[in-house]
Amino acid sequence: MRQRILAVLGVVLLAAAAPSASADTDAQKLATVRQMIEAWNTRNWEQVYELFAADGVLQSMMLSEQTVGREAISKRIGALAKDISKIELRIRHIGVADGVVFIERVDDFVYRGHHGQVPVVGVVEVEQGRVKAWREYYDRAQMIEAMGLKQDFDAAQRRE
Image 1 (cartoon, one colour):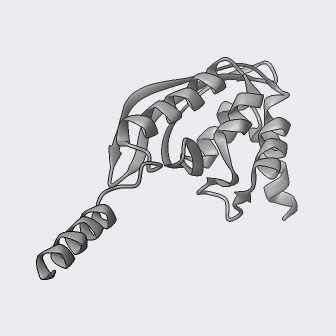
Image 2: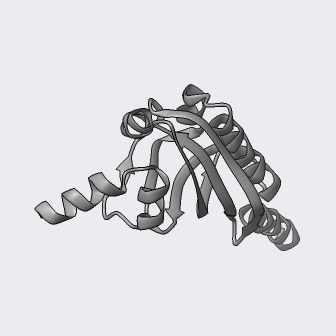
Image 3: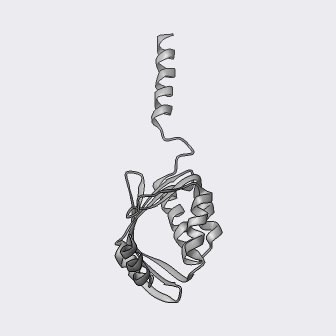
């Protein structure tokens, strides 16, 4: 009887220690992020939104606000996307560390007719095939200038 209890206990402990069948592997996380990048590159905005979890978070780390939820993310990206006539997120390096995807890339885009390029690092958490959190790190002043918004940005700063 004791051996049977120990055997059952062993099976329970092994099952608890094993990753769940629904947990994303590193390869699956990379595939999800690559799908997201391809959706940006083809300006398939619906796919971009759909790849976020319903309660996903998007944050440019230079700004204090997070955008939370697929609907809010859709509005935020949609406002930006309407003025993008070309975009290519060119990956320099991509990998997974501690279950999180890190992307070093250069964003090459045309925004309101103005061509720009900005180096960016993205940190992406993926759960169940969806982006749970996407944090972006870039030089905000460089991004503003690359978008052709420096004059607008400078004027706004003077008003504050």
